Image (cartoon, rainbow, N blue to C red):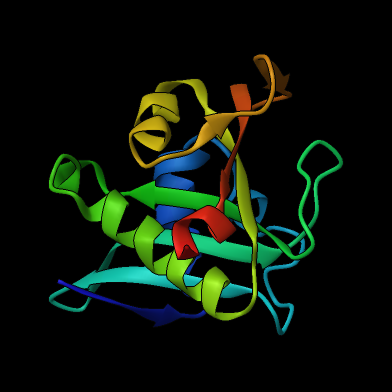
Length: 149
């Protein structure tokens, strides 16, 4: 299994399948996907994209940091879950953010993914909130300056 850079377009099918299953593919295109500072990573298995994560240089008012990054659109094909693939994708995203000078990384984590992120060292930064049409989420963050030390 290889983890490598992919295009924003290469993330859409898996985002749709896992994150927005009953919505049109266009709902899986996020603001900032085509920014030059955005990075999309894919886990490739025999030419098939089976995991994705996108990383945006983006601040959040509840997350303090000089150079914050946001994780968004993280998804793993159901048949590949439980094999450490999500953790590997997250590690690659964090490594990229650190190499670009990022000092904190944050995400809106779905309720069902919260424990995964906590196991990866993320901390809760909010109470549960609902994103319309998507469901319950929590703001989470990880201090990358601490990881770097």
